[in-house]
Structure formats: structure tokens, C-alpha cells
Image 1 (cartoon, protein in one colour):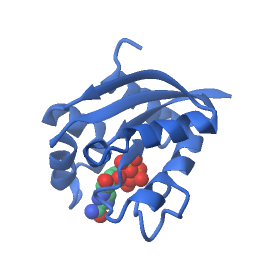
Image 2: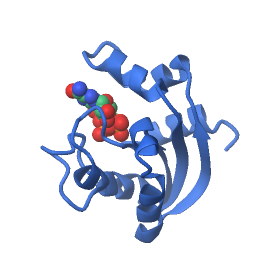
Image 3: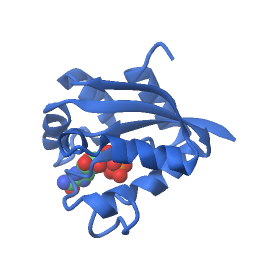
Length: 136
Ligand code: RTP
Ligand code: MG
């Protein structure tokens, strides 16, 4: 079943020059790019995107990090795109959870600087795509 998911190459991924690497992995998996934009996001948008984490210990650091430099927002589509991209990304903690061969497992060391975001459900994907690409 074809799905759409919202992927972010977070500011650490952009500053480290890993945008091409991430896009390449998405395309090699067989998924397609439906929209893509380099953008520096404001605090309100970041808080809306990560609303589920409002109140958690890492929330303020997370918002500061996400707004701290340009990121690349991408709508990815294809068969089981939501799970397929989460598999490419690897677990949230790049060392303890993500395995080698995944984006986080290959390139990350710290939970906060884990390079990419991918929507975690159909509902999240719809909500997030509306935030980032309201015209889609
Ligand atoms: P994401 O939403 O960014 O795709 O990551 P995720 O689903 O794998 O992880 P989630 O639990 O949604 O956490 C969102 C982001 O918050 C940062 N985080 N920091 N310091 C911490 O303990 C901590 N926990 C989470 C990470 O950047 C994580 O990707
Ligand atoms: Mg998440």
C-alpha cells in the first residue's frame, strides 16, 4: 500500500554534508521524493512538529537544535514508506539502538544529534505533512 511520510534531514545532517547520503538511501530503497525543501524553521513550527514531546526533559534542547540551522524537509512516498524509512533511519539512540547499516547507526553518536526524523505512524505522517507542506 502506497504511503507518504515526512522525513527531515536535521541540522546536524545538513551541516555534516549528509543530505545526499540520506536521499541516496531513500531512493535506493525504492521510495520516491514527492516534495523537498531546504528550510530554517521557526520555534513555533518546531514546537508544533514535536508537540508530542512537550514537557519532556529534552524538549527545549530539541527545539533549540531543530531551529539552530537549515534542515531539509522531504515528503517520501512509496509502498510502506513510513516503516521503510524508520528502518533506514534506525533506532533513536544511534549507538544503543540503531544498528550498523542504518543512517543513525552508520553516522550518529548522540541521541540528540541523530541526523534524521521520520513520521512514526499514518496519523503522524498526515499531521506532519500538513505542517511542513500545507499545499500537498
Ligand atoms: P524523530 O521523532 O526525530 O524521528 O525520532 P524518534 O521518533 O526516533 O524519537 P522520539 O522519541 O520521537 O524523539 C524525538 C527526538 O528527540 C530527541 N531526543 N532526545 N535526550 C534524550 O533523551 C532524547 N530523547 C529523544 C532525538 O533527537 C529524537 O530523535
Ligand atoms: Mg518521533
